[in-house]
Length: 84
Image (cartoon, rainbow, N blue to C red; front, side, top):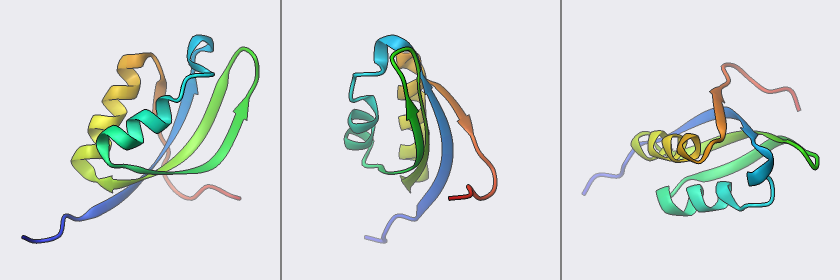
């Protein structure tokens, strides 16, 4: 069986207050076989923001993004490179 092609996508996630302490990124990664790489994150008592590089099969990444949106996470694609 041929190997599936892996892709990378960079996204900005903004978590509502009620999800800040929930492991939603971990659950999405495990459920859809996605490897997240945290490029930047900021978490306070009222909001959580992170920029993630998601690596996996394109179909799985799309499913993972839909999963996060369904939970109430604001997901926006980021084009280009992130300055470290």
